[in-house]
Image 1: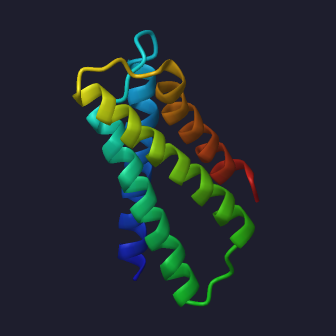
Image 2 (image 1 turned 180 degrees about the horizontal axis):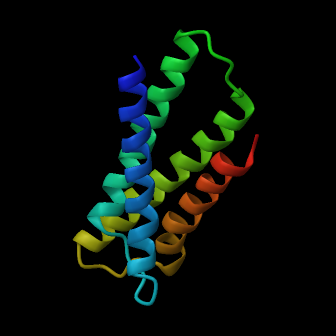
Length: 116
């Protein structure tokens, strides 16, 4: 179980890196890349799996914090799906959507790191 948890945490961090790294890489010409979309999906899936395992093993879970993180993750994934869909169709991605993907992901990282 410890290996599985470590693997999920690793993948969760890789998803965060893809989201924020993609945002920084395209900051001057805002868009949503396939890596950001993949990062959003990885973040959502691994986050839910981590909480599920913690809940199943009767560990203490701060469900208020997890709810805030889930709302942010769903917003990031929604913006990533919309933005990437527009990018694939060669339409201009609205600046607000492109920055929402990276900015909300960064806020989500801050919640994870700073909320005790």
